[in-house]
Image (cartoon, rainbow, N blue to C red; front, side, top):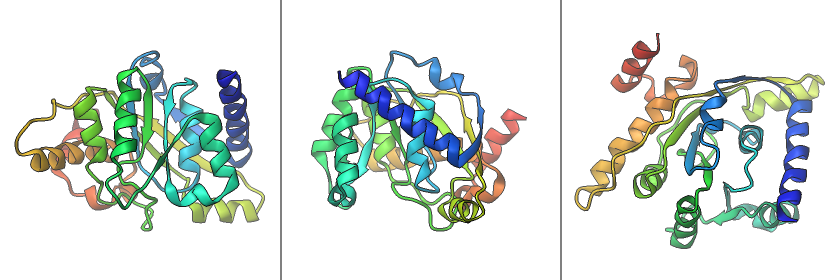
Length: 228
């Protein structure tokens, strides 16, 4: 029954995306090849539609997603979290309960969709990421799949809706990669370096104007050169 509910809600979300957007998908097989195994899909975060694209990319019922606690006051989001077995996250506190549950689901083979930046970018470009995703990847051993989305900026989507136009969106999936195991010492430095690696992988998939604080990263330049 839970699987039926998941697929029904997913079909509604995907239909909504198709009505609101005209989407070009690139290299989606990089996610599909992880079928049945644990993985972390790490994406940039430009607008409200980004989370919906998790369901466009992933059809697995073991999808793991976290929803900011501030949305708990809305009945729709409470229903969505319950129906899809999502997790609430307190963003401004050390939410160890959600962290442990996320790791537990990853260890059971789940696939996590998450934005390392933690919140939508007000500049409509990459902002400094938090170390949480790097911690989860290093701790769980799950491969990281970088994803770049653009065209989902709330401002642009609203403007297109006013003109009864579908928003052109591009979604590009990079190659999976794994992080070294979490060390016992110098964890802060390790997580900072690995967070930069994750964001560089995402930045290299984005057009230059969306790379934000990672625009001049030597690692991004290196990845761009490798991909050309």
